[in-house]
Each structure stands twice: as structure tokens, then as C-alpha cells.
Length: 165
Image (cartoon, rainbow, N blue to C red; front, side, top):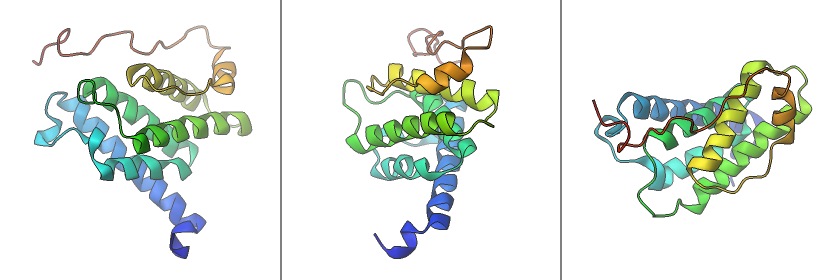
């Protein structure tokens, strides 16, 4: 890779912008689950794979934003039928989950919002996209003091259950 692309400032900036783009796509999917603003589903677009892969190097809020938005996108607009996800997207999602767990294990100042939202999104992505990810013991441990648990996929948002309004 060119030298400027490995510099910390560029990696962090790319991660922040990737997280914002994933968030915007997730918001579009949430607003219009069957259409995405007239555009195609991004899961099999190589540009989307690069975006997901670049999101790992960001701050805790960037990573949480990316994971949560991917979870929303997976629930509203699942990948095409039985066509498997491209390996670059799977690798990017696994990297984001690992990054969230790494932040949970090393940063004692992260807030409840990050812990609960990241754990919910990691669990939901694993289940909705059928991706094998490692356990997240630090996220689990940090969320255990709360008297509730946010369960992923508690409501089926598929078009068969929730028809388009």
C-alpha cells in the first residue's frame, strides 16, 4: 500500500468516513427496507466490501456506529437469497467485532451505550448473517451488571412478517 495510506491519521480518517457511510446506508435501509432509495442492495458491491474493511481502524464510537448500522442493514435488507456474502465483507465484519471486543477489554472508560449497543449488534450480525465470530467475553462481562439484556432478532423484520406499508 502507498505510504500515506498506512499513516495513522489516514487510517483513522478512512475508518471514520467508512463508519459514516455505513451509517447512511443503514439509515436508508431503515427508512425504506425494500428499496434503499432506488439503489441496489450493497452486500455484493466491491466498494461496500472496501468500506466495511476500512471501518476497523476508528475510534470506539466509529466502530460502534459501523457495527450497529451493519446490523440494521442486515435486518432490513438481507443478502440475496442463498448467495453467500463475499469473503471481504465477512472478514470486515469479523474485524469490526474483534475491534469492539478489543476496545471492551482495554478501555475502562467506555460507556454503557457502547457496551450494550456493540454487544447487541455483534450478536445480531452473527445470527442474521450466519457468520461465525468469536465470543465476546469482555462485552458480555461489561453488560452483565445491567438488569436487562437486549436480545438480537427478537422481532422478525422479514417482508413475510412485516409487509411493506
